[in-house]
Image (cartoon, rainbow, N blue to C red):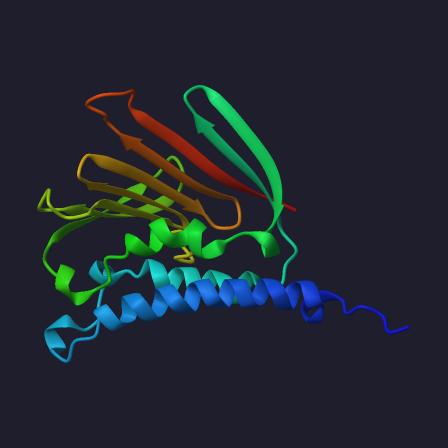
Length: 201
């Protein structure tokens, strides 16, 4: 009897790789196509063009094949629902879509965000902060916290708003994915949902 493959070459990991690659490739193509511009003024030369998409792809290449289990926790109206899910079984395109939609690396955003940088001595963290200059912009704020020595990203925080719907997105590499959604209702109760994916080892 033929033994099942192990590690990176097992059927389960191949299935996971296909799902991951499909999600990242589709989102990357959609966003990179929008960002093409031959004008040298719009070249990617600095922090204004930080790409959430590129960072996500780098995360995939770094951690692909590791058998993570994630604890999914959904909180809404005081109720909490939790479940364990293998990384290979997650619909990653759906999980990551809010982050890809919040990518501001397209050259059309040049000059539409103010940039500041500060050093948090208490946590020994360098913080890069982008704030929308116009309230009509979908992405209102992007904060990237990095290690001051290695420049490695410790976490990313994003705020978006459109038509009264607010999202707060947070990602700490291989620790936590968090998506919070707020929406005020004129008739019924307000919407407030928090979804977390906690990485377990």
